[in-house]
Image (cartoon, rainbow, N blue to C red; front, side, top):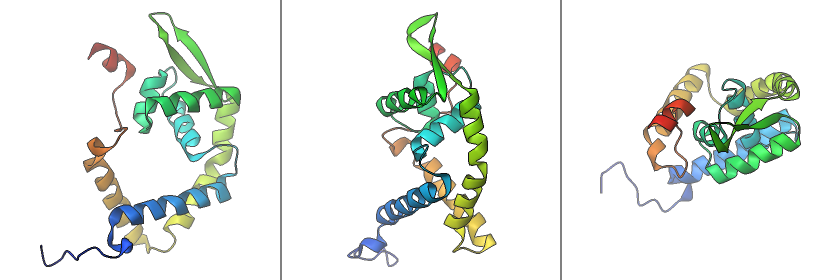
Length: 164
């Protein structure tokens, strides 16, 4: 065993435990700052749809790092709320093209100040330099371990997905 590694007898020595706790804290602050109109996953899907209009449900799930069954449920809920529309793709009748509605765009716009407060609150315990370092390290941790996920993030476009 390397000198720098302990026996890991305390949960607070386990990165996974700390990441889970950080996620719990993040979700709690999310609802404080963003309200209850959207869940964090719904927000992520809608935010990604905003910049990928016309994308299919499977691809939207992939670029959001969400499994396809959860993605389908989330899209159905967002459609019920009038925040997106799903249209059959003529070339593949099993797929649906997703489009954000005006109400969805307005909601995302209205949530910008809350998302800014969320970020500030979550990172507040860190100095400015630590915030930059933390975000860089967290991004690296997520990117380098992406393939270990049950729903790896994908940057594949719908057109590329159909070809490959």
